[in-house]
Each structure stands twice: as C-alpha cells, then as structure tokens.
Length: 128
Image (cartoon, rainbow, N blue to C red):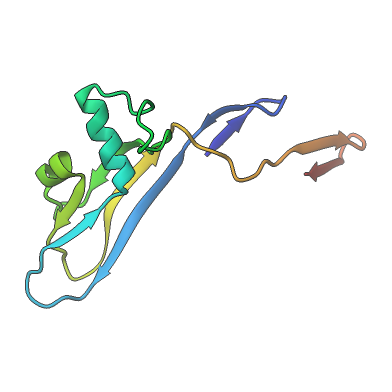
C-alpha cells in the first residue's frame, strides 16, 4: 500500500503479508522457523542500548515487523526470547503469521498517472 503526493513524493508506504503453511506430518512434530539473523542481532543490540550503526559487522538497515498476529499453535514465549517461531502444526493449510512493515520500504517502481480531459464526457489517462 502506498500514498503519493501530486509531486511524486511518497507520503506513506506499508507492506502487509502473511506466511502460510501446508503440513501433513505424522505424530506431533515440533517445528522451528527462524527469522533473518540480521533482524535478530540488531533487535538484541538495540535492546541492550548498543548503536547498531556503529558496528561494521551489522547491516545499517533492518526490518521491523509491526502488528504480528500468530496462529494459536505458535509458542509466543519462544518468539519473544529467541525470535524463532516454534509450533506444533495442525494438519492441512493454515496461516502461521500475519505481519505489517511500515518503515524503511524501498519502492521497486513508480506509477505516474497523467489525466487529460477530452471533453465533458471523455478522459484520457496515461500511466508511465
């Protein structure tokens, strides 16, 4: 989702996404899904009060996930402490997590509309 001014500057941008799983595993297996290591390390460094931009080993950009909504099978305490999604999956297809990202979004392309009135009942719209 994006809102752009008439001059072409981005006013607001966000990405809404979800991770879906389709599982048919026998028994009650315990599954762990890890997030990007850079996300984990920079989050831990920020929590300790360390300037993540001062370290050459870490990237200057990281992804901050907003509005995380987990499926009921996810053990939330593991995500809080280790940034891993640990769960025992139900059979079939289900939504594991829903998220939103609103900071640090780079746009892959821009659409610039040009609207021209051709009369009282006609418009010409060109999208570059």
